[in-house]
Structure formats: C-alpha cells, structure tokens
Length: 386
Image 1 (cartoon, rainbow, N blue to C red):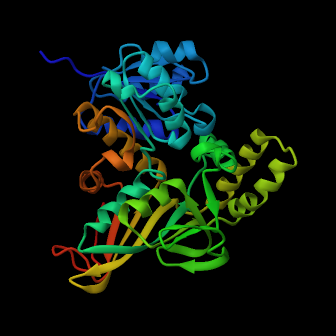
Image 2: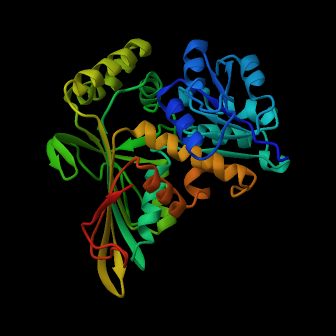
C-alpha cells in the first residue's frame, strides 16, 4: 500500500490558509496537518474534512521549536503565514531541516537569498517554491500563458491589478514592510512610477492617476505605476521592450492612507497601529459593496508578420482564493516531481497551461480574452469561466 504524502499547511486558519485547505482537498489530498496559533480555529477547519483524517498542531512561525515540531514528518510544508518580509526563509528553513519540501505563497527575493546563502537545498534533493500566490505568482504566470495564445512575438505588456476586498493582518504588515524591503539585495519590493523601456528599468517613466476610469474596474479608481522585481524578470523572459504595470486602488480610504504611509513611517509611527488603520480603511471601502479582484493584461506583438494584440482579464471574488489555488498547485507539482530540486519562483517551474486549466475547472473567477491574436478556438471578446 502506497503511503499517502503528508502535507502541512501552516497558517491554515488564515484567509489564504483556509482557502488552500479547500484547494488541496479538491485536488484529492486528505489527512492534512493543519498548523496555526489558534487551536479552536484549526479544529473547526479539520471538522470540515469529510473523511476526518486531518490533524491539528499548534505552531507559531516565530517560535523555531514549534516550527520544527510542525514540520517533522511532513513531505511538504505549504506556508501561508507572514509577515513575509519579516519571516523571510524562517519557515522554509525549518521545513528543509525536517527533511521536507516547502512551498511559500510569498517569500520572494529575501527568502531566496537566505536559502541560497546557506547552500542550495537541491543538493539534498529537496525543492522550495517561492512566490506561489496571486501577486507575485499568477501575475507572471498569466502573461506567460497569454504570450502563447496566437502571438509569434511579444514586444510590450500593460498590466492593471487590484480590487476591493478585506485586508488581512499579514497583507497589512507586508505592505508596509515592502516600502523598504522585499526586493533583491535589500531593496524595496518595487519602485513607484518606474517602467521598462528598451528592455530596462526607467525611473519615473509613468504618472499616477488619482481619479480615473479603467475598463474591468467598476466606478472611479486610482492607478499607480509600480515596477517590481518579478515584473522586470517577466519582461526579460518574454523579451519585452516595454512593460507598464499599474496597481489599481478602487477604495478612497485605502488609497488615501497608502499615500501617507511613507511619511508616517519616516516619522516613527507605530507599524502595528498603521496596520490596524489599513485593515479598517479596507473595511470602510468595502462597506455595502461587493468584493472583487481583477488582473488585466494586454500584450502587444506580432502574429503572422503583422502587429497584433492579445488581452486577458481575470475577475475573481478574492485574491486570497487565487493565491490559495496557485499554492496548492505548487504543492501538487512538487509531490509529482515536476519541480526539480533547488530554490525556485513559482512562475519559473509551474506550467501556465496547467494553472489556467485548474482555475477554469475550479471556478475561481471569470476569464475574458480579447485582441487580434486570440487563439483559434476562442473568439475575441468571448467570456468563459476561469
């Protein structure tokens, strides 16, 4: 009888963790190990297991001993806790020390740098997949998938990502930490107003629009140009001459606070208090409105020797559910030995076609393809379930 792999979900009672447990169960994984700081919340999730095989373990990511006990015996650990830029490679290192693979829905460059500094874990046959979420993660996988949909060559990408949803404590903390960390070599996660021109980063290439309209986003929104390390790698991988990336903020309360955050932090304001204010601002923006999250991409290039475009709009009820779906797929890929040993970003080792197929069957949102280079089996402007 084949031994069932043991998957540990750390942060199983959080916004992403709860959704990840559902995704893993839908993929056929049972007998999960659910970890977190609140035993009662973990037990409530375990009780939803139709076969009653899940186990719960109290685990705090900031307590090394507790992490070791949680990871012991796991084949793979799926990390859904943060703040990402404070924990860095803490969870992945504990998983590796216990002989397990690790998938992190965030992690990003700081975690990769920490892991590689101590030697490549691939030498021991283990895999770590970082940035296995919506953004970063799906934000790079979807443009890669779009580039295969009828274009012979891609030259430019315009992206608009954002939405109206609750703000978890982890997201609130990471957003503030990203202003000074999260990128490679100790840099900030990204640079506002920057863009790719001629295949390289150009500072202050674009402008913020505080009150505008954008197709796919209801009502008036603010759009802020923002270039991250992941986006730069995407531009390089696709051979793009131009990349314009915009974060979209539909909520006036959140946008107002975000514009003040750098100044507040520079003045020594309490980050925990600012995080609480950000969570409240998101709740105020959401009051009486339906939550949504949109990822919109327009890729320019050539098809059959002529200029052509391909567009994709993904609309979902929650970015947390999208993050959970990518994380669960990365776990599957690791267990199926699709991911080679070593440290990787999800966009580099997950198959974009497989991700889109899963999202379509899972019903996580709606996908709309547009442009003059739509694939042969999809008419432009056709809508379908993703």
